[in-house]
Image (cartoon, rainbow, N blue to C red):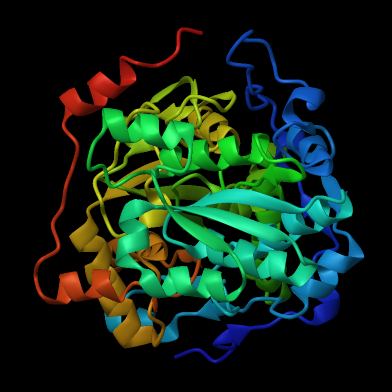
Length: 455
């Protein structure tokens, strides 16, 4: 076993990025603009400012500035848990008997348990700076809601969270962490909003979806003075904030002269994947290096692999702007799988454009295969991974085993977005042999896509 590279590569505080990287600045084909659903014209800053914080609107619309400075207050907060370690998975390599070198960027070393805090603290900061009373949001697995409740507590903001019903019921302790930090948590769809009541009438007994929760959170934000809506994934601004993951990863690899061959990340809305691959995709776009980039999504909600690239609503209630993305249709109701953070009908416009341009590839995996990999990783590497992260683990293991067959010494980097200690109901289902794999039929997806807006 080589000892040239330590198990954990740590950067110093002084090496925390001082600017976020905006990969759109180097994309030849820019992501398509958000459209006003009423006029079908690109959304203006004034229109978006009714929903989002002013500074975040600027970041959302900026596709020309490569680097955007991280305010000192945010950098100081980052120092509480960043830089995050890049870990060489020596034990996993040995167990698999693979010549591949495997690294993972671990984002679970903060109280929220995931990478979501990177953007939550930024969005809360800009809300506070604008003089707002509070923010509203949605959450699937609960990691984003937890991160945002922490960030809002830090800045003294009110936080209203709409949590996808199935996750609300599966993860009571995640819900209680949010409440501990002062957030109010409502299962979605709910009777507390007009859109929630409408969704319940159309889909009685539904387990909910991120699209439903987004609709409710936006309605509350736009009808409550002094509040704005914030989102944990999908949007350009979120991928921008999450670029700290990729920037640190690349800096750590460069420190030891390591060149990655492939970068693997789970993909639901795109925050983790977009942040992890940002500087690598930038090099690829500029012709400076080449990488194989793999997005991994659940077979139960396969936006990339079975969706259509088209303009669609970002939410089930059809009140948000239209985004051009790989989508299953905003009315698609995913099966209640245990990777709640990946149960979104669409994908980031930035990543969708990159995928359409052939810059990244995608793969879908079944839930039981994902938890098999999660269990293996926990036993070998000593970290209980989140179900979302385990999608990337599954494909990283698969690729390492291919290297074993071919004898290729490839370097694999994947994102470990967070821990799974609040996901024990899911692990229990797997351990008891009760976990099922649900894959939507072609007819189900076709029926949902038939309702796409005519743009």
